[in-house]
Image (tube, rainbow, N blue to C red; front, side, top):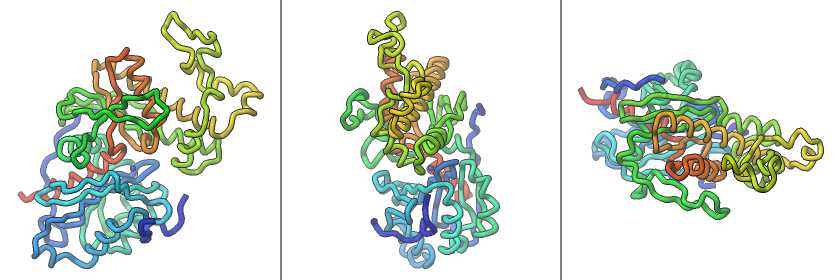
Length: 400
């Protein structure tokens, strides 16, 4: 997947009702009320997502107090868009001039594979993070998995936060406080059946309640959100983005998510899936309104030796993507119908560089609801858990 230089400089070349968090105080070894750097970390099963708040409004005294190690961290994170072969800063998603805890600054969005976590720990040790902060605010399963490693190898504790709490807080913060630098964060797709570029229709998400969130990461969690404080996980499935990548690696020999998506983009799933038209003819199943191009059986043609021989790895990747997406869309739609919710938001890193799934979800929601529901998407996709973790800096460093 990567090499040992993943975090070395490489110039431009991730159903319980919630309870409101209670303010906490924290005394850092730096003695500052607002110790920098501020991070939010979401350590998922496939990707790690890191949010970095770069302060731009430090006072002259604060500028003077800034340690060399802090300046080094800031320069390292903000002057590169790639870190070795697998770390990436998503510059398109950078949020500028964000006001956070009395400071104005930029939010940077960084991701790397979870399997590279050891290299991130090494980088944090080399950059002397422990001389600046005692604590990383982290969510995701990896916050538990890597807790001891952070403590013993870097000397930093992990404040472990609930993953779904962080996702909801992150969505609300980005949507209501930031937007995407003057543009809407939320959008629907107006041309799901087109082969051309996706056309985004901005969606005003300022008063969305109630709504449903399908957070598609390695697996899928589906949440019903009635307010910023009232939300619950109502369903989910283990068949998510991790399933797609794992199956593609088995079926095609690819090694990364980007490779799997690239293969799927070039494939034809109808050479693998059995369609309604393969069973009923071109007219489809008219009695129940199922057109001929609807999938009747995912991978249904693979029982034929002839079809197996003719299916390419691109076709297999596309069929895998369609299978997982259709399953997710069907489950989410059923949940929305059961809960009587019209607004459904799809988020998570499964949707990164994945217009195929976005189109399928958009078309499916419109088709199944007979036009009464639209699939909604968010520009920052899978970063909301990390944003929610970043927000916890407010509670720890809040002045009593």
